[in-house]
Length: 355
Ligand code: MN
Image 1 (tube, rainbow, N blue to C red):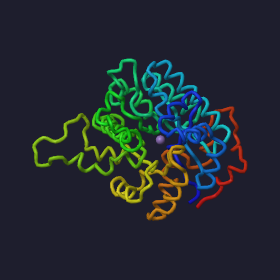
Image 2 (image 1 turned 90 degrees about the vertical axis):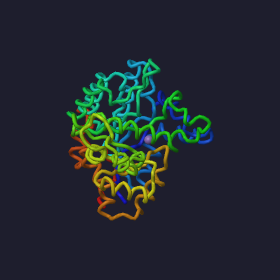
Image 3 (image 1 turned 90 degrees about the horizontal axis):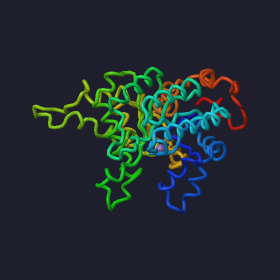
Image 4 (image 1 turned 60 degrees about the horizontal axis):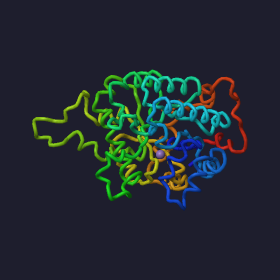
């Protein structure tokens, strides 16, 4: 399938690169390292080969979220975003951006989101789970009241927030002690991110900001499979879930969330997600460079779903969510002074195809 759009696709700067070393065996690090630092070479060849028209790029994890000093975190985010904007300007029809945001400083986070969307033309933000602070007792989860101004700003900007995984802090990861294989993508990423998403829903964030859209990777971090149980525990008992939010968790999940196929290339799982939240809220992604583009694309292109759903999930939903519906719009949000042309070259040819 041509024209796919992929949106959980990462790069690293020299500064953030080290954060990914732990996620590859030593033997594979040279390959992962070169994939993370590359944008316009192997990445683009893989995109061309496997029918990916556009990638929305984001910084690797945990990067900004793991920097304890808020000023340092903000500076790092800003440098990474400026670097990404330069890369996008070289090929705006092939790459767009999701901003790195230092949530350690909620007001600064809102400002940087605004700068990235309005000045750099980014399509949303991607945050790697909770943020560290100097107070080791207090990781920051974004259901806290301090973040309400940030969420209000994001709703005004009308761009989605990708809640990307990170591992729990060692002091919160007792259950994984002696079982390090369960950390990272195997299990801990999904558990950590799903609980964070449930906190956002339960706190009433989406009653206050009903237009907010959160994206979860990895087919929803297990949540679609558990939605019914979350809302229907011990149904005969007099007391049900007690939280501040007004509605059922499933209502928010179906109206304020989108999920991607990143790193979870399984038709059975996709179909469960489609039955729970519908094909309109599922978007193709690979999770390059941690997962292979051919693994994602070969699976998705041949998955037993209807062609209509494949088009929605492959690119239609992303075009709507990120307002990518025409090249004119793609271009109009580029920073003024950057190239107004598409910078077409041999790599840009696939943008003209429609399947
Ligand atoms: Mn990822």
